[in-house]
Amino acid sequence: MQAPEIEPRVAALVIDSLAADLFRFAKGFQRQGRRSEFTVKVADDEALTAAYLFRPRSQVLELGGLPESFRSQVRPFNILGMIRDKGPEGSATGRVVLDLLAGQARPFATLRSPVELRAALYPGSVLTFVNHLLRCRGLEKDIADFEYEEFRAELRRRETLNQAVRGVPGMP
Image (cartoon, rainbow, N blue to C red):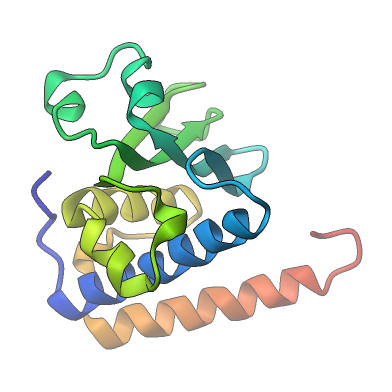
């Protein structure tokens, strides 16, 4: 997939951060004895469910409705980004979006560093998925519309807000 026109430092920040997160998730599952098939939910509330799906080729190709351009990029081991909208304004209730974020010949849990995982990422798909996820989570504009310092400031603001909400009794 063609990467959206995003300021290069914003794109690098998004891709490097996701590579580090995905690597950490894969290693965590490896410590549990799992190597190639697992799911990491990153959001599950009244508005949407979002997850990273680590799946072998056979399972990805079993999914119906995938365009040939998607199917042709599927490797022996893959990471999919999945977002299921639960009906926020402007989207169809229950709509599921799948982005193929990464693919490679061996399980992701066998990698030794986030740098290795980053090399397996499909940058355009990663940026599209992260943009969609952030927009669903309340980011008011596309990441393509941010300058680097503005984007970092927005991430800091959102992290501060998230920490404040976590400190409220009854909030996760």
